[in-house]
Image (cartoon, rainbow, N blue to C red):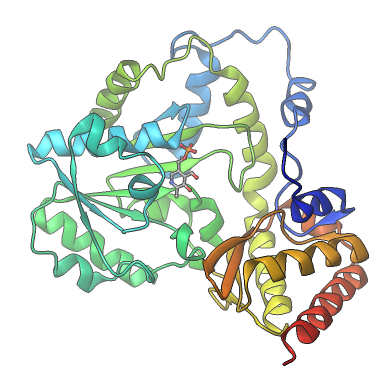
Length: 366
Ligand SMILES: Cc1ncc(COP(=O)(O)O)c(C=O)c1O
């Protein structure tokens, strides 16, 4: 029997929601398919106009020689690190302790590719230049994740990126960008995707996060690197006979949303301020540097779940469908601003936050 989950249920009933682009229903695909020419030819095992055109467009956007579409970022990045490790004949790479590869991929890099990892920096902060220069092991590649998702989407300064890039080049160490959310950080850095990508030897971006398509990833780099990536993609079974159901939406939502990242970023700052003005809440980071941040409550998860469910019901504004326990006395959820926020009337928002704050204030009274 399914256990009741009032937080999720009340969230799903709300008229407005703070984060995201909306429910991930079939309409995401239908909206695209309804508009395209039905005679477009399917791609075929990684070849064909529909996939080639999109790859060329992404290579240009990222300022790299070539780009290749992958069904997932997980597949793309393990392959990128494998190629750089093979090139240097050194099966060791370095990244953040909370990188996606380390905590969400069931050890794929180690199990499939036998690549060892060096964990850089304390897990509660971003990688700094000194972490890289202080590394006392030789590695083939360093992976930087921008923004660092598991710590609320924090970023190193642009100068730090430049320093790490120059140092790595001098040492003959490849630099790979986990840019799952690269577009989302461009407004903060005030740089183009190509400018940031130029600091890296290989770059991955996700097509379903801020862009909000169905699934998929782009891996970009020089000709030699991409030629090898294609071989590895085939080995991994990543050349689905047809990928167009992913590519058409990726292109459509890239066009629709890539110019909206500055709006999402400003909105994230506004919403974070609302949260930070409430009792017992602080956001990480305090002032967001992309469209995302984490909302921390210095109260037990069960208490906050009940309270948020009440706010959902009474205000009609959905804050979150879930909470993650941090300690017995604290919990958090993640917010990534998307299209939905702009639909919430300002007065409704202010009212929902007033209600949240009132409930928190009475909950924490001794
Ligand atoms: C930072 C980061 N890197 C890589 C990935 C992997 O992407 P995919 O789900 O396409 O495998 C994710 C997915 O959440 C991510 O957040």
